[in-house]
Image (tube, one colour):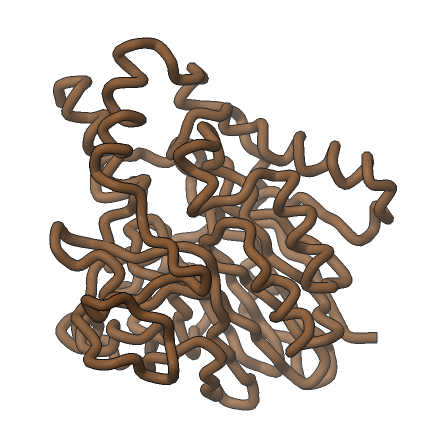
Amino acid sequence: MHPTLRLLAVAGVVLALGAGLAVAGAPGGQPMDKDGRFTNLDGTTPQSFGSVLRWGVWDRLTRKRRRSPDRAPVPRVQPDLGLLARPPAKGEGARLTWLGHASWLVQLDGVSLLVDPVLSPSIQGVVARNAPAALAAADLPPVAAQLVSHNHFDHLDLATLRRVRAPVVAGLGLKSFFRREGLPATELGWWGQTKVGPVTITFVPAQHWSRRGVFDANKTLWGGFVIEGSSARLYHTGDTAYFPGFAEVGRRFPRLDAALVPIGAYDPAWFMQRQHMSPEQAVQAALDCGAKAALPMHWGAFKLSDEPLDEPPRRFTAEWRRRGLAAERMRVLAIGESVMVRSR
């Protein structure tokens, strides 16, 4: 692919051209603009196409962009498949396994859930993985549901979802999209809930946007997930900028045992800060929601912005230490690594 065309393609993936169908009215009181498209709580919308061109092409050609390698070493371990085949039972807490990027295997109360499963070798054939996914779909235990935070290609990977074949839980506007792909789906507005076996799933606000095609910007809803079992309460923020909603999640769901917070794809700030957090902001987000533990994600797997791939965890750890926070409340996992969390 010609370098300039690849830059445009990468820019499109970073803005993560999303998918979906228009939703009539404002279901569940979701904020919408005059054209019936979802907005963030503060009314903000995506970057303009002119901003995409400035960052993706002009700033690159004029050498205004920070330069960093497309590859970097990222810690990775081989998951224990025998262990993952046995989800923790009721009262035993939750096992969280980071599969890379924003993808997690969450297991609690005898149930296995996938969150934003992206196990393919690239994003739409444009952005290759820097580090392999922790598992192939065939290696997964039986999955009760796949939770999809929004429709951007690096979070909604149809190839993975089809291989797993489990029902989907996602935001408003996506049920018909998944039905066309042969996947049963439940769609939720912000603060909407559903049950997967004994586990309660709540879709919560995030500061982001959605798109998968040319004309469907913000026609489907984005968000994060609070996952509650008998002995663990978890918060996957989804893809998000820093916003006051973290404190509101913490207010509505006190005693969160772990927050999975994105720390990558933040440079340059003028372009990224409306949709992603810096590592320092991710530390603040974890504090805002009151989580007992912070587990960073959304770094190392795909080169989506200008910072070095291995920079985010260094900055996150440095900020955690600078604030004098307890070391045991934060853990940077290797891809494929698992951690147990439990309410005390």
